[in-house]
Every structure is written in C-alpha cells, then in structure tokens.
Image (cartoon, rainbow, N blue to C red; front, top):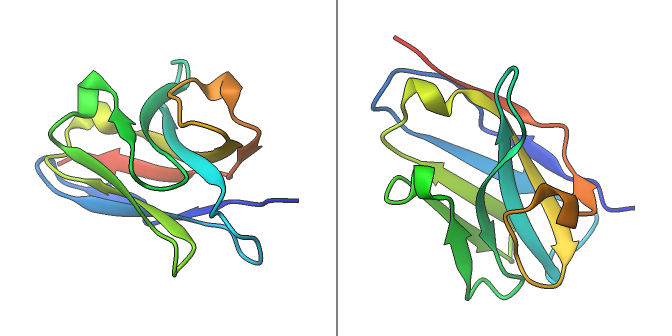
Length: 123
C-alpha cells in the first residue's frame, strides 16, 4: 500500500518561503502523478499544484501561479512544492496525493493521500 509522507511545513512570516516535500518510503513514485492540495479551517480542500509522472507536465492553481513551483526528483523518490511570497491566505494544512494517470487538481481523482503538514503564514 502506497503511503505518502509530507514534511517541511511550519510558521513563516508574510513574504517568506517554505519548501514542502512528499515522499513514499519503500514505494516508487515513478508511475504516479502527484498533486498538492490544501485545506484551511472551514474551507473545502483546494487543488494547488500537480505534476505528471514524467515530470514533463504540471499545473498550478491561479491563486499560486508565479509563487509556487512543483518539481520531482525521482532519484530521491520525492516531490517538492517550493512556496515563495507566502501570504496569510496560504495558511492551511497541505496534503500531497498520488494517482496513476495524468495530474489533476481535483481531489476526488486521487487514490492515495498523506497525513498533511501545517503551513502557517503570520507575522
């Protein structure tokens, strides 16, 4: 069973940066598209960014375009989400998810989920 583990969350000031990691210990991510999602209190889960299994295709939500970058390092079996120019509205629990096939920003299309990592943007 594929298990995903997120890391890299924390508290950061507005305008700061964080890099989130999504790993799958003991299981290859080579054939999986990976998506990053976030959920703030009282809000629905929102698709943030996704990347294809090959890494050749990715999509970002409009709310994060120009600020967030998704990438994958197959040698390290890890997918990253580099988040720059963070704002208070980016505060949420961030989840990574995996699916076979193309990457999508629709949570219901993903079969495997991590437990999430908290990102808090506050001064």
